[in-house]
Image (tube, rainbow, N blue to C red; front, top):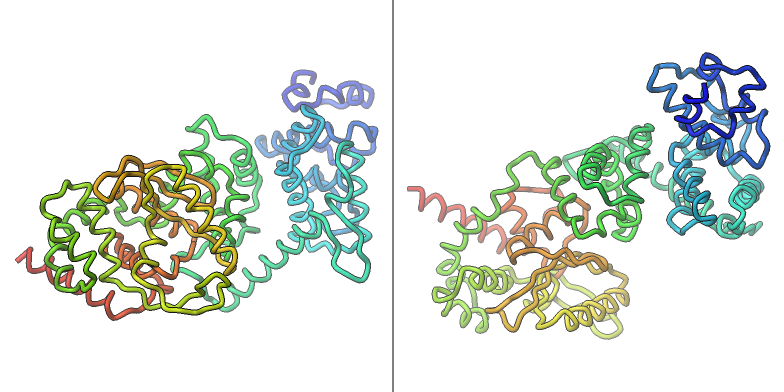
Length: 475
């Protein structure tokens, strides 16, 4: 019995179980309600960790029954210990608090999320009195926490604090998902299950692990794979980029783009490694095709020396001049106040697709300016390719930038591929100024057609010309 208790992190309760003459058979049917009655308030934190381990042990050995479930699921009894006892995530929060004596902002959000999910997914009605009670219990269990972080009473108006915010957002998300299911519509052809259907212990445990661990890499990949369906369900909503990175902070690591590529390959079973081969084919015919379509003098001059350049420079030149073929047709907010609505220019398209700068310092300064400009017009700065070098003919470093994260990549083509897959996997909208160019890359190189695709005459003509050129070459 002592060995079993140690494996379940329940050594602190050995004397209690000995006094009650509890053996292994008794543990198989032990419920939270029975257990809670025998422990002091000071041991609640350790009890939650132990009870979670006990539940996993029961589940692994097929001992779990309705008696093993903590009370309060249908709303009769509501207390913090009951809620935490039903969550595998709670153990990570409590263990961290035991080790450090405090909670980080991330763990506060996790704790609030556990409570919010308990209320929303079990249809338990909440009001300010209930939230106030739970906030009191949080402060009691986690002594260094302050109640106001989780709940601020505000009768007659919406309350403040993490608890209300999490509950409100979950209800809004659930309502939106229900509306989508009733209407039978979806943002894409690949529909995913509702997150509540994927709320099983294994998924939750893996998701929780990924929020606070970045190695070993093999385990990262395994847990990332196991949470794929949950992640796709979350990303099928209109979540903001900041919300996505908060939910999946591991994407902020240098290898984050590799996880995105793994998801892309699961979403689109077509061969996703043909981009470079298709690009080489495109490069062989682009010069003559573009010269017949382009009127911009700068692009024409670049193409005149095209044949004498290195292969890497040819790639950079084509990605520069393609914006003078697929000229923007949308209008957007412009000017210092962001009130003028003018048609985007060729240069606007380029500036929102690739940034060329001579140093990392210049790049960071430019990105700050772009972020500030987008903030004024209430639009996020979408993923963008960044190149460091002295000129279009000489680049040394390549990055994809996304919300404060730099993914360093070996060349400009790999940067285009990764940036595109970020848009697709994270369900992000192409920037308006260069949406034609990204749609062209999507349809021609990745053979993807989405319901949200922009319809445009020039784009259709270019795709058709390339198709006919390929047929002619085959003949």
